Length: 96
Image: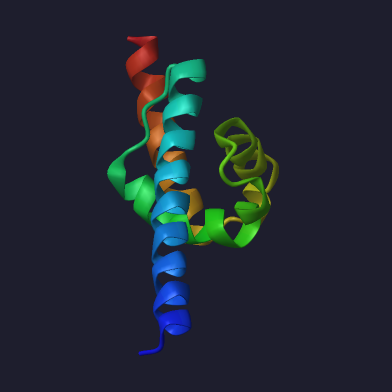
């Protein structure tokens, strides 16, 4: 591999890891502001949506969170399903 190609591959890997961490942290921010804790499954199912819908907001975690909420109708069905399930479980727990 040429030095330029290696640099591009490394840059892409670092960006991918950064986006994943930023997305996971965005759920933590949402969780701390709304007393919600999203599952690892939700983070996994929604990472693609975060890349697709909110990549311009990275690395600003509060903006990523707001973007995901704003784009909720455009989330993949798997992401919506997992998030809805997690939110319902958290609401039930809070009501007890």
